Amino acid sequence: MAPGYDTLCQSGCALTSLAMIYSKLSGKLITPREMNNCVVNNGGYNYKSWITWEVPAKCGGGKIVNDRDNFLSPSDISSRLNSGKGLVIQVDGHYMAVTGVNGNTLYINDPGNGQTTTMSYNSNSRTFSNDKYQGDGRFIVYSM
Image (cartoon, rainbow, N blue to C red; front, side, top):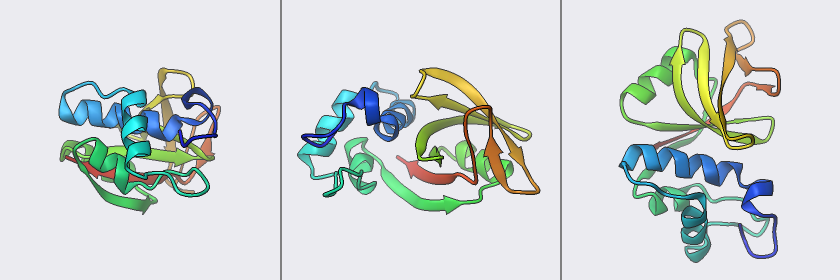
Protein backbone atom coordinates (compact mmCIF):
# COMPACT_ATOMS: atom_id res chain seq x y z
CA MET A 1 0.00 0.00 0.00
CA ALA A 2 1.05 3.59 -0.28
CA PRO A 3 3.29 4.66 2.62
CA GLY A 4 1.39 5.53 5.78
CA TYR A 5 -1.80 3.69 4.84
CA ASP A 6 -3.42 0.38 5.73
CA THR A 7 -1.76 -2.98 5.25
CA LEU A 8 -2.43 -5.33 2.33
CA CYS A 9 -4.46 -7.46 4.70
CA GLN A 10 -6.66 -4.51 5.68
CA SER A 11 -7.13 -2.77 2.33
CA GLY A 12 -5.44 -4.80 -0.37
CA CYS A 13 -8.36 -6.51 -2.10
CA ALA A 14 -7.88 -4.72 -5.44
CA LEU A 15 -4.14 -5.30 -5.47
CA THR A 16 -4.49 -8.94 -4.43
CA SER A 17 -7.14 -9.52 -7.12
CA LEU A 18 -4.81 -8.04 -9.73
CA ALA A 19 -1.95 -10.26 -8.56
CA MET A 20 -4.24 -13.29 -8.92
CA ILE A 21 -5.29 -12.28 -12.41
CA TYR A 22 -1.79 -11.57 -13.68
CA SER A 23 -0.46 -14.78 -12.14
CA LYS A 24 -3.08 -16.69 -14.13
CA LEU A 25 -2.64 -14.72 -17.36
CA SER A 26 1.16 -14.79 -17.32
CA GLY A 27 1.62 -18.30 -15.94
CA LYS A 28 4.05 -17.04 -13.28
CA LEU A 29 3.35 -16.28 -9.66
CA ILE A 30 3.05 -12.59 -8.84
CA THR A 31 2.46 -12.09 -5.14
CA PRO A 32 0.42 -9.18 -3.78
CA ARG A 33 3.61 -7.89 -2.11
CA GLU A 34 5.50 -7.95 -5.43
CA MET A 35 2.61 -6.20 -7.17
CA ASN A 36 2.43 -3.60 -4.41
CA ASN A 37 6.18 -2.91 -4.51
CA CYS A 38 5.99 -2.34 -8.26
CA VAL A 39 2.93 -0.10 -7.91
CA VAL A 40 4.59 1.97 -5.15
CA ASN A 41 7.87 2.26 -7.10
CA ASN A 42 6.01 3.42 -10.23
CA GLY A 43 3.72 6.01 -8.63
CA GLY A 44 0.62 3.85 -8.91
CA TYR A 45 -1.23 5.32 -5.95
CA ASN A 46 -2.85 8.73 -6.04
CA TYR A 47 -2.93 11.23 -3.17
CA LYS A 48 -5.85 9.35 -1.57
CA SER A 49 -3.91 6.06 -1.73
CA TRP A 50 -6.21 4.75 -4.47
CA ILE A 51 -4.76 2.62 -7.24
CA THR A 52 -4.16 4.20 -10.62
CA TRP A 53 -5.33 1.17 -12.63
CA GLU A 54 -2.85 1.48 -15.50
CA VAL A 55 0.23 1.06 -13.26
CA PRO A 56 -0.55 -2.43 -11.89
CA ALA A 57 -1.36 -3.49 -15.45
CA LYS A 58 2.17 -2.55 -16.49
CA CYS A 59 3.57 -4.21 -13.35
CA GLY A 60 1.87 -7.44 -14.39
CA GLY A 61 3.24 -7.20 -17.91
CA GLY A 62 -0.18 -6.48 -19.41
CA LYS A 63 -2.50 -3.63 -20.18
CA ILE A 64 -5.82 -2.30 -19.03
CA VAL A 65 -8.59 -2.83 -21.56
CA ASN A 66 -11.39 -0.99 -19.78
CA ASP A 67 -11.72 0.29 -16.24
CA ARG A 68 -15.40 1.22 -16.38
CA ASP A 69 -17.06 -1.82 -17.92
CA ASN A 70 -20.35 -1.76 -16.04
CA PHE A 71 -23.43 -3.92 -16.45
CA LEU A 72 -21.72 -6.94 -17.99
CA SER A 73 -24.03 -9.90 -18.43
CA PRO A 74 -22.84 -13.45 -17.76
CA SER A 75 -22.41 -13.98 -21.51
CA ASP A 76 -20.31 -10.78 -21.76
CA ILE A 77 -18.14 -12.04 -18.90
CA SER A 78 -17.78 -15.47 -20.47
CA SER A 79 -16.76 -13.90 -23.79
CA ARG A 80 -14.06 -11.79 -22.14
CA LEU A 81 -12.70 -14.69 -20.08
CA ASN A 82 -12.70 -17.01 -23.12
CA SER A 83 -10.71 -14.43 -25.10
CA GLY A 84 -7.96 -14.46 -22.46
CA LYS A 85 -8.94 -11.35 -20.52
CA GLY A 86 -8.78 -11.04 -16.75
CA LEU A 87 -11.61 -9.38 -14.85
CA VAL A 88 -11.82 -7.74 -11.46
CA ILE A 89 -15.30 -6.97 -10.15
CA GLN A 90 -15.99 -4.20 -7.67
CA VAL A 91 -19.11 -4.65 -5.57
CA ASP A 92 -19.89 -2.64 -2.43
CA GLY A 93 -16.39 -1.14 -2.49
CA HIS A 94 -14.74 -4.59 -2.48
CA TYR A 95 -12.64 -6.00 -5.34
CA MET A 96 -12.55 -9.67 -6.34
CA ALA A 97 -10.99 -11.67 -9.19
CA VAL A 98 -13.47 -13.26 -11.59
CA THR A 99 -12.50 -16.84 -12.42
CA GLY A 100 -15.44 -18.17 -14.39
CA VAL A 101 -19.11 -18.11 -15.21
CA ASN A 102 -21.71 -20.84 -15.71
CA GLY A 103 -25.20 -19.74 -16.61
CA ASN A 104 -26.09 -16.95 -14.20
CA THR A 105 -23.45 -17.96 -11.66
CA LEU A 106 -20.24 -15.94 -11.43
CA TYR A 107 -17.21 -17.63 -9.83
CA ILE A 108 -14.84 -15.34 -7.97
CA ASN A 109 -11.73 -15.52 -5.83
CA ASP A 110 -12.42 -13.30 -2.84
CA PRO A 111 -9.21 -11.93 -1.31
CA GLY A 112 -11.25 -10.90 1.73
CA ASN A 113 -11.55 -14.50 2.90
CA GLY A 114 -9.17 -16.34 0.57
CA GLN A 115 -11.90 -18.53 -0.84
CA THR A 116 -13.52 -19.17 -4.19
CA THR A 117 -17.17 -18.26 -3.97
CA THR A 118 -20.09 -17.49 -6.27
CA MET A 119 -22.37 -14.60 -7.05
CA SER A 120 -25.74 -14.90 -8.78
CA TYR A 121 -26.83 -12.65 -11.62
CA ASN A 122 -30.31 -11.12 -11.61
CA SER A 123 -31.18 -10.19 -15.20
CA ASN A 124 -34.09 -7.96 -14.13
CA SER A 125 -31.97 -5.66 -11.98
CA ARG A 126 -28.70 -6.43 -13.80
CA THR A 127 -26.97 -7.02 -10.47
CA PHE A 128 -24.70 -9.64 -8.94
CA SER A 129 -25.16 -10.77 -5.36
CA ASN A 130 -24.37 -13.38 -2.74
CA ASP A 131 -24.93 -13.47 0.99
CA LYS A 132 -22.28 -10.79 1.55
CA TYR A 133 -22.29 -8.44 -1.46
CA GLN A 134 -24.78 -6.98 -3.92
CA GLY A 135 -24.41 -4.48 -6.71
CA ASP A 136 -24.25 -3.84 -10.41
CA GLY A 137 -20.53 -4.57 -10.41
CA ARG A 138 -17.94 -2.35 -11.95
CA PHE A 139 -15.61 -4.51 -13.98
CA ILE A 140 -11.98 -3.73 -14.66
CA VAL A 141 -10.77 -5.71 -17.68
CA TYR A 142 -7.11 -6.59 -18.29
CA SER A 143 -5.18 -8.51 -20.91
CA MET A 144 -1.60 -9.54 -21.57
